[in-house]
Length: 120
Image 1 (spheres, one colour):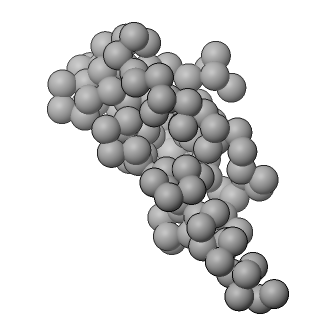
Image 2 (cartoon, rainbow, N blue to C red):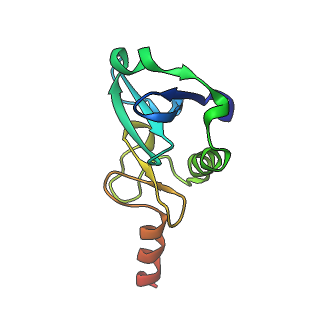
């Protein structure tokens, strides 16, 4: 997976990751980028954003990049256990508490583990 990640800088967005695995459900005119500054992804119009992207793998903070890679690799399922949306088809963020993917519905590993504890 890491070989597929492309790291860019954008004058307004900062350092971003283009992850081909996170492009599901988008039209050709759209692209989803993960912003390292906010540790969250957003969907953009390709024609507007791509013209200002500069490929720059050295710009990424190694620690933040590793958090992203670990969150993408460590998920047990490719979809949210709460709302069942596929992580490749939604904008998501990385939870600062557990460093796992947080779906747009708000569910992450913190919520999953507390739900399991309450059920036990």
